[in-house]
Image (cartoon, rainbow, N blue to C red; front, top):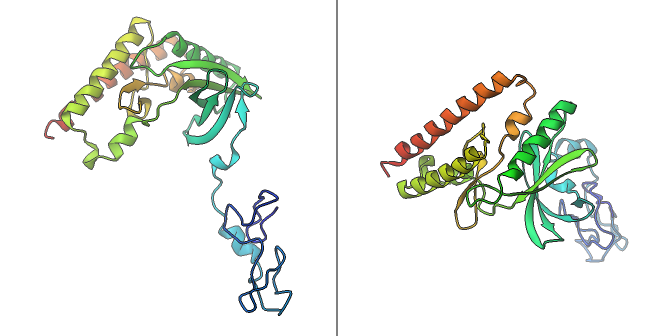
Length: 265
């Protein structure tokens, strides 16, 4: 059923629009008679029920497209049943899904492929496989699966109910954590990095937005290598090595800065 006010499509048995709240069976303000959906005048007394829609105004006031309103149903032939939209970045859209085979919640990151050539897609696949090779570690987000859905590569990983460190910092005064919490998170990140480096993998994009938190606050590193894999401007091996060394140095500086910035707390 299409809403007469905003044009949104609703279920056939809907009593009101789930987007704008418009009533599908308007009641006359004069005689209280119920009228047909979309009626502009009362069938009993001819009282005006609603102003004539202004298409130009409706267009001007139309909300920005919300990615969450276009949820895919599932991935991997129905194995991962999408529950809701979690967020969108420059390189991916992330959904909360239910793994019907193993009966657990997972995060499905759909990689945006706009502008990526075959080499770029291959890099994404290699980096996702590298993340999977890190195995199960308490301070690294576990990758469960990778796949392709209608040309869209996706990565299935552990769902982090606590959000990311950047979100946590945004809730704190002056983006500062208590020193005990900063030290705990720093130590956990360091342990995750040590595991990755022991497997010959360097993150190359360590930042608060890539440090995730479990429901109890345990810090886990995610998104290994994806930023570099999706950046088509980094083409040479020497350039990659320089990027890796620079990012590692940045990670060390970031962790040190976190401790210094919170010391006075």
